[in-house]
Image (cartoon, rainbow, N blue to C red; front, side, top):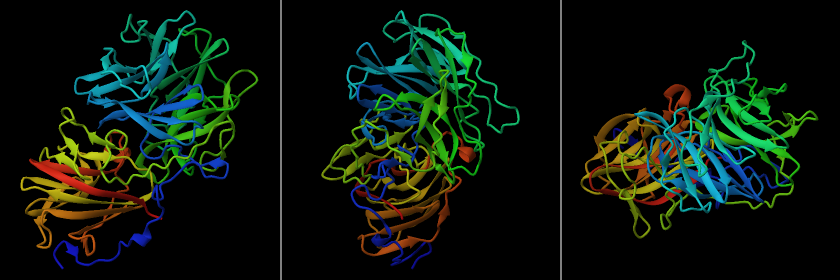
Length: 513
């Protein structure tokens, strides 16, 4: 017994966890001919989807995470597996990207928001799995670029607030000033939204018309804030006519399962008959998971507009027809014998290149210590999408470092436990409190954190047999954008601060039933 824990606490038995292989993680494909949203769980906002033959590729906003712009692949729109990240250095907070294929080359256009303001960048590759280029700065403001090509082959980017910018033929520079070509759709004044926020333009060419989907209403705030709005035109420069069926998608009540639904991309289904919208939304009661990726069937009206097909996106929906469904097990446990930096693990806001921050060594991930605490050490984080989960890892510190396991939202908001040569360090709401280290703990300790539907409990052990429960439990239900800003999510994280290095072994992730 000590002042900050209860020795021998047995209240975290392995029998309380569910699943094997993918450890009980949520899966969209129910195995019965239906899927249940989200199709990609956890913090995967601002989805941009590309259909290329029978293959689908998906990319999301990655904000302060490096590597960023993780690309996903699917054959059926429901079962997804990661391919590779396209961005390997920190260029600012990476907002809504657009993934396109043009003249045999892949491009990802994206905003980068930093201390010097907003710019837009592009990376490119000849193959989807890379190698991807270094980012090219287009030196234009605004956010959320959406790529479009005119009938005569000229290239453009649509931007937030309805602006249009001409691109060079290679897509790597801007050739003229921005021109405002669209003013959005005026929603009813009594609707409760966050703000107007005309953002996220995505262009689809169908027949002799261009169709533009935009986000309005703000991406967070009230549950009924966000929406997907449609307009169409026979020319890229307009005039653009709003759909009489607007909005195509919107959360109309706080009682719905998915809040703030918006930022949609239109895509043709595998059978080339059914169409879908891919967009994001917050899960009612689980805003800390961030904005998750949803799939909704839509239909074309006789007069050439788009409407919802009438499915409840919070319930089971028939699987897309014609797809070659391959269920992917993507377990989040990691023995550190393969390199999953970029596909699972990312550094938060690294101040320099990440190549010197880590290495793998005989089943251990070795992190070079940096900074004074989780506030400034660029923790290594991972996204998860379960309502409850348990994470566990072995931590070995040297005489100059502090290492541990966290649930990390931002440098201002995190909770967890760390150890140094001399101290046990408690992290709560971003505060750092040192305690005297128990005599049973030397330089190697196992830490276990359970987040059971926002209630966090922590244990530690010198031998993985006898566990000590930390005296404090925490409520992390408020660790989300509406209280802390940043458009982020609460994530398990490993950290190494001080100097020297910290070794991590046997990372385990299981969903809690």
